[in-house]
Length: 220
Length: 219
Image (cartoon, rainbow over all chains, first blue to last red):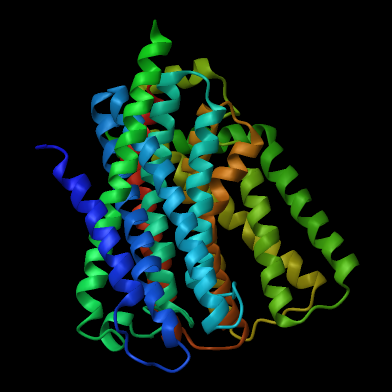
């Protein structure tokens, strides 16, 4: 029970935001209308992805310092899970854009940045497959992971803020938090963010444990 | 030898190696000239946006071709020898500086040829040259480290492209924006933000390369 409480908390939080998010009151805004409820699902995906990539970065640094292969497993599984959340974020975003902007994909710096950042982490996985030797693979992919991270930050957080963009929170637009969310939405939104981050960490830790078991079986 | 002297010696070594064969510089120059000519044959005349973007794309591929050889032109045994007498930081720093100089030379030549064949459309030539200078250094810093990584991964050219494109795209976006501003004739005061971002990315890339390369070379 001691270790399980946060998993229960994650499920309760996400379930409550699904119910509270889909049934609760939302402010009536032009263009957005009811689609504002997507903010409970679209935004937490990206937060979760960032947290997972950050975990991956930390474990890559730890791997380089210690050389323990468990750290390498954790780094790669965090990236694997992060890519799933990135795909979910892209899909919920495209759904939303289709209704508010009239098209699922526009030539927008925020959207392109997210897509290119995904390419970066897919390249990380391809690099891993290209290397046969286990230690070499762990070391070189850890180096690429650390090397790519700051550039990903520039891509997702700095460039969109400097260019014209349709997306909230970039190109001089305000974020949803400043303008459109009322006092009912705020707690639901924060619960959703924390809940999804916990779910993401849970999936990553499960995958990590599966990989440990596989590794144990292969070594005998 | 301290770090600075080591870096100096290594750069001198690279220059001498290049001067003896003249392989890289000649092949890349020929590559640039023929690409520009092929583009000229197919486009005939271009508007300002295509003119600008085309130049950067030509430069991008020339840079990848030039940089991907950084760590494979010498054999593994010789690398072992270098690592035993100089610090890894000196090796990567020397490569970055040498590649930057090479890239500046290359892109200047490319720009001159490009301007001869296509009519120049840059209204503010000063800023355009600044963009080319910053772009050459950015390409050199990013591609040197990626070339080091892909050299360790068996130096497959696909790996080099896969690893470097996502990393270079943010830089390329800023560079194209900055040079497009130069084409439209805006002054340097309007472009400080872009120049600052480019410089910041370069400093971060060099710092990370210095931190990571000592881990990379150890086999």
